[in-house]
Amino acid sequence: MEQRTGLYHNTPYQHTPTIYDRIQIGKGTTILPGKKDPAVAHLIDHVLEHGYVILPNLFTPTEVSAANAELARLEALESSGPASQGGRNPFEGFQTKRIYALVDKSRVFDTFAINETVMKLNDYFLQPNFLMTSFHTVNIGPGSKAQEIHTDDGLIALPRPRPLMGIGTMVAIDDFTAENGATTLIPGSHLWDDERNPKREEMIPAIMPAGSMVYFLNTLWHSGGANTSQTWRRSMTVQYCQPWIRPYENFTVAMGWEDLDQVPQRLMRLMGFSTHDFMGYVDGRSPRAGVEMRKKRLIEWAFKEKEKGKMSKL
Ligand SMILES: O=C(O)CCC(=O)C(=O)O
Image (cartoon, rainbow, N blue to C red; front, side):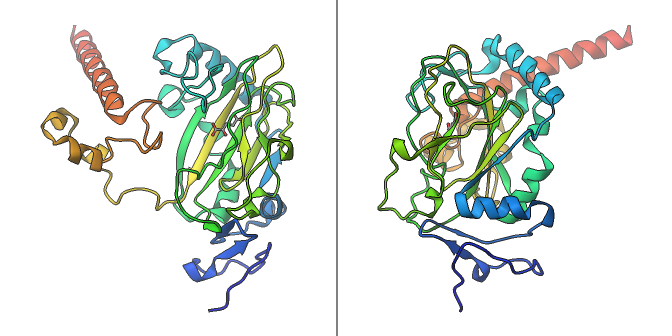
C-alpha cells in the first residue's frame, strides 16, 4: 500500500475513509482525514501545519455575557462540584476553579459545544460519530503558576507518530492575555517525535478576545499560562475524541444503580465505575460518588414530581 506522508491531503472527499487513507504529519501524528468542507479548508490547513488555529470572535457578545452571568451564578453554589471552589492538585492548579459536567448544570453553555465551525473541523480531523470527552470551565486566578506542559492524549500510552485521538479547544470568556494566563502552546509540536521534550521558552500565549476559541490537535504540547495579573482568566474547555474511545457496552448506564452494592468490586471497576488517572471522572469525582449524587437527585426529583401530582389533583 502506498503510504502518503506530508502536510496536506487534498484528495476530494469521495468515500468513507479507511485505515489505509491515513496520513502522517511530521513525526508526531497520523490522521485519517474526513470531509474537508471548503468553508473551513484554510483553517484545516493551518491546523495541519501548526497544530492549532485561533478562531477569533467565534461566539457573540450576547453568548459570552450569558456564559459570564451563568458562571458567576454557578461559582456561588457549592453544588457546582468539588473543584468549583478551588483546584485540588498541581494539574488543576491550586489557584484555579473548575466546574465540571457543564451539560448537567445549565443549558446556557450548550451552544459552545456544538458550534458549526468546530463541528466542520472535527468532521475532517475525527471520524464520524466523534464524541465529547470533556466540557468544563478552567478559571485561572491571580497568582496562579503555569500549568505543567502536557498533551491531552498523554494518558494514552502509544508511541509517536500516533493516531490523532482527539481535539482540544479553549473558549475565552475573558480576553486572553499574556499576563492573565492565556493558554500557552508550542506551534508545530504535534509534528515532534517522542525524543523531543517541550521547553517553556518555546511556548507562545494564545492571545485572543473574549468569545474566541483556540482549537488544537491533542498531540500538541500546551498548558494553562501563569496569571500574573490582578484578575481572573475565565474560560471553558470543550474536548472531543474519536468515536471508538469507549467500551462496546455502556455499562455505567446499563447497570441498575439500585443494585450496585451486589456487584463484586473487581467487576465494578471493569464496568467503568473506576478511573484511569482522572479519565472516567464524573463531575470531577469518582464515578461511584457521581452515581450516589445522581441517585440522591433522582429521589428528590421523584418526590417533587409526586408533590406536583398531588397539587394538580386538589
Ligand atoms: O487552562 C488552560 O489554558 C489549559 C488547560 C488545559 O490544558 C488542561 O487542563 O488540560
